[in-house]
Image 1 (tube, one colour):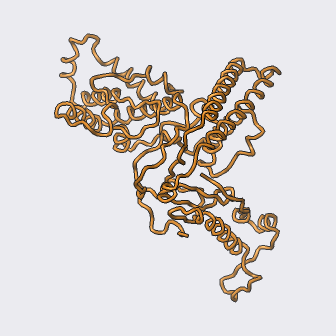
Image 2: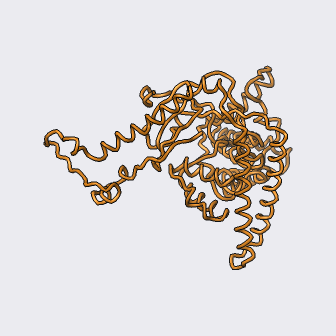
Image 3: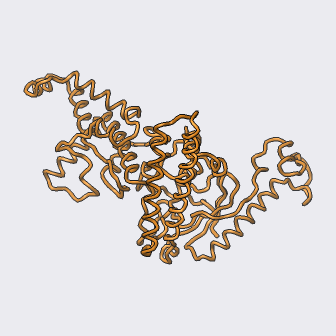
Length: 428
């Protein structure tokens, strides 16, 4: 989706005269409010830089405009793409030829073999052992090489269809490293054109999708458990659906009130590090506390409930309702009740999940890990990790993502349009 060229912006980041002179090889011009109008030779270098920046943006925008996108804007903001205002549609994917199917299958099997060998070598981790170190370097490089070939083969299958170009737009902007880049296939939040968009390829494995959505399920359970009002509403809604035949919404399979509890054991089998997560800690402790309070025999349970105050019963009801929620899935969600629950509960998964080597980065390619760092920080660490082993690269990316509140697509909210500000960019 991105393309562009490099624009030097080191001067913009300078804070002292010495830095300006070193970075731009010019003398800083001191400005006084009472000075006479400046001649061209006296124009501060940053104003000249702004003009050059405008030229760079407009030049690239003109070339993109020739591609016949519905609209093209230039952005001067600090981020490569403001995800609060813009969304992006995936490129269409054509059917692969028999040779391409065979190539992708062969590369996938080869990557799986290398990953299995890498994991086995990691299990015998010994930094003092030359065999371990050489194998780690060889296998990590082999995985990256195969992954690059897979991505190149998959990229060859993607293209922009004419109807997408007619519906969507492009944003020409500058990222934090000074690159003038283009985001194609963009739509404004809340103004997405209707039409048959491309089906999105799931960028992560089914196993990782289950891992991420299991964490999201745990977070939803924790939020419902802490809100008796939400728990009652969810429970009443499910009962009304059944009793009054009010089915037909986006999905009725998230709340298992009939009751199929989604327990700690269930969640921990899918969600990496569940027991150490905020939701895992809350839910596990709540279960322990309720188990200690409740009578051991079912025939004593009704009397115990009748003897409790309303607040206790509501809290127990909230916990049980929460445990009926299961939004874990191996595929990308396209719409279910969990989204409505998440919005009503103001769920922000950044409060409940952070990307680590184990729960995310070791399961994606180096390119996807670098892309996450770029999106979270505005900095491209491609050159930094290029000489690292796979393990070192994932640890480096994890450290860069720490504290950024970055989330993968699977954990981001869906269907929350944001009005587009009137002055969002210069339309070309």
